[in-house]
Each structure stands twice: as C-alpha cells, then as structure tokens.
Length: 591
Image (cartoon, rainbow, N blue to C red):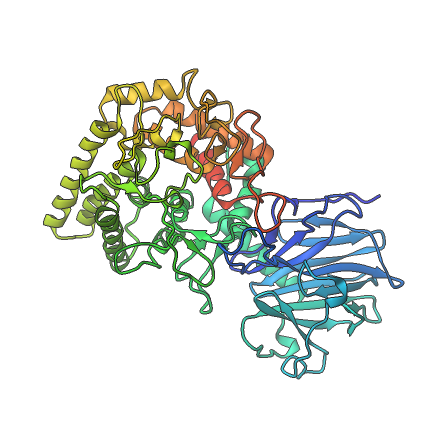
C-alpha cells in the first residue's frame, strides 16, 4: 500500500504559487490515505463575503490516473515546488510553471483523466463547451470552464479526447505533457514551441520560492528551523501581485485559501513588519493598505481580485507598524514620493476615525459595529455598540504619533507635525483616564454607560503605548495578564482568560490567535518586558511549528481549532497571518 510523501498536507494547506490563482486541493471529505484522496485543481478567485452557507466552487478540475481503462487508487505527494499524483503503476507530476500556467508531466504510460466543471456537480455534467477560439491550432487544445474564469487545456504531449471527461493518453513513448492555462478573457495562442518545458517551469517556480526565502528569512534558530520553509511557503503562496486584470495595485498577502480568500487590509501592516528583512517587499505590502480608500478616508478591508465596496473596517494598526519600521529598519531607500503618498493617506485614514467614529465628540473613538473590531465574537463587546475600546484608541494615538515622526522625517510642514504630536499626547493622556478602573482595562458603551465585564486580552492592547503609560498601570496590567486569573497559557496568550465565565473555544472568546500574540508581544517589548515578550513568542512559535500554521489554536491543548467553517468546508486551512508571524517571532525572539 502506498503512503504519501509530503512537504505539506493538502488537507492543511492547498498548494499554490505566489501571484497565481491556481491551487491544488484534496477532496473536502478526503483523507491523506491511499485510495481516500482525490486531487483537484482549484480556482482561488473566489469572492469573500458571498453566502457563507453555500459551497464556493473552490475545487474545479479533478484528476485521476487511468490504466487499462480503469481509475486507480492514488496518494498525493508534495515538495515545495510540485504536487505528485501517484498510484501503483506510476505517477503524474504537476507544477505551476507560470502564474497562469500549470504543467502536468507523466512518463509511465498512464492516462490522465481531467474532469472539469466544479466540485459540486455530478460527473455526468462534466462537459466543456466547444470553442472555435480554443481549437485554432493543430494539437487539439480545448477551452473549459474554471469557475469565474476559463482554462485552456493544451495537450503538449499525448492525445486529448473527450470520453465524458477529458482524457490525455500518453504518446508512443509513454509520455504525456499537459498545459492548463488560465484566462479571464478569450485566449491568445502562443505557438506550442513558446510554452516552457516541465523542467523549465519547475526551475522557474524553484527560483521564485528559493529567492523569497533567501530575502525574507534565510535561517532560523535550530529549534525553529524545521518549520521555516513551510512557514515561508505558506506566506509566499498566499501572495498576490498586480497583473493588470485585478484590482490589486501593490503586493498583498491573502489570509486563508478558500474560506478567507482575500487580502485583509489590517493584516498588511503586520505583514510588512514580518516581511521587513526584505524592506522593498515590506514597503510595497504596507503601501497596499491605502489602495482602496473612499473620499472620507475609509479603507475597504477585504480585497479580492475585484474590490467591492464594504461596510467593514478593521483596527488602525498602521501607525504602530510604521513606527516599528522606522525604529527597526532602514527606510532611506524608499522613494520620497512614495513616503509622502503614504503620509497623506495615513492622515486621511486617521482623520476618518476622528471624524466618523466619535459619536459623542469627546475625543475618544469608538467601534460602531462588531465587524470593525477584528475580534468578532469577543465578550468585551457585550455592552453593545457604539463601543469605546482602549486598544482602538491606543492604535489611533500611535497613528497620530507616526504622522508627526514620519512627517518630520520626510519634510512635512512642521506645524502639521506639531499638530499631530499634540493630538497623540492628548489622546494618550485620556486613555488611562477613560479606560482604567485602577485595576483593569475595560471597554464601554458611550450611550448607555455600560462597561464590559470580560477578561479579554484585546483590552490590554492599550499596552502598545508602552512607557507613554504610567508605570503603575503597566505593572498591574502585566501582573494580571500573567497571573493565575489572566490570559497566559503554555501556548501563548488566550484571547479570553480561561478563568472568565465567557471563555469558549471560538475565535476571540478564548483561543490563541495570531493578532493577539503579535500585538501583545510588541506591547510587552514597548513596556520594557522583553523577557515576557520572548516567553509569549516562543510559546506561540512552538505550537505553530508542532501543530501547523492555523491562526486559531485551542488555549488548553495548543492544538489547532478548525471550528470556524464556511462554504461547505470542514475547517480552516493554514493562514499566512500565522505563518509570517512564526518566522518573525522565531528569528527575533527564538535565540
């Protein structure tokens, strides 16, 4: 019986390439076992925010290995560069040779069955539509549906026939080579001779990934090195690039294949920090935060290939990230016009919160809806909305400070810089006066006056202000966080303290989640507690290395928590939010 040999398990992480909308996936109900797995080519141009109860058509083309007219049981192998479909009689290898081109190669005399049409339709319905455009060459190319786009099947070696599904039979030497080229418009044919060989395509994807690893994170401390390539690969394959056909204007990092197939704007400043060993890449990603902004300064948070207006916001972490980059990286090589454009948009974004999220005009900003918070099921919002939150206001104080400091660095009018520094200092002063009860941080509803009664780590994100806060507040906050009643666990900081009556295994009701670890580690550093920052970072890195790059882990066991589901999937896949945080934490705190 065959056993799979895997770099990554497709049940944990569908397999893609930077800038590509192709991905390979196992069956949603499959297993990583001989005869229990099926290989699909998936379309990652899905639209985040559609009906969460309906399958999204992620899996589009199914592959089978045929010998003597029979489909044989298979296993799925992976390397960082290839997916291999293997049976007892041989294998077919797949690589994403170009961002819009997958190549499949077989040398064992097997036939490759290609069943297009979508994972949720019956086999009898899997027929491609004839296209005169697609059949204007002499190798028998065929144009087939691929969800929101189309794929051109190119039989570069072997004979392609329609037998209810398409089948590519090998040539006289037992070899086959299939190209699958994605098109969002009618295809313009290249001569067959202009397509890369399988070996050329494999060399291209290898150089792409290896170069990314070298620039971003070439090495980690020994205890974290075993997880380095997988973490880098997950972030690399979730990267999207401007291509003239999407609404992406800069490089961005998407979150999770299939369920959260979007680049979330509040994650981009975090990604910029984590990717900042390659400062040009980091700046590109940071800049992307401001690409979709309305005239009031509101940013669309979830960006798919086609940006759509959204009521969603997320917390303004942009000032925190920019200050970190200024203090820890060399930005001198970034063109001044790009810096000025970022300053102007950061000012619009900060003013948006000041102008549209202060309902009682008291200088304290509020969340207006749960979707804006980034902590969508947190019990700290049980007091209702609008919700004044200390972490939100701390982030805005740092946005204001960043406008002042970054503005001075790029020659912005000194009066503007003075204005924003004064605004920041005034807000910093108000935060403990408004949100600290002498022992704990709390959120409140400014209409009803009701206070939160939860034990939520997000409230302690106010500590990102570091030594700008009174030392007594810092000390009491840290004593609680790491005390018997607090959020500290062997796996990182729980989003809700296990002692809380609201503690659950969800997203922000008790799990160990990526943004909580990042914000609190940065906060602990800012408070001068590098020892505790390192403790949290190392605890979190250990569970990511051991259990996978899921962004939700069980706070009592450390194991991944796939309880959040949508689109008919049985759980979440690996997240680039978690994978990038891993190699950043491991490099910075793991020694």
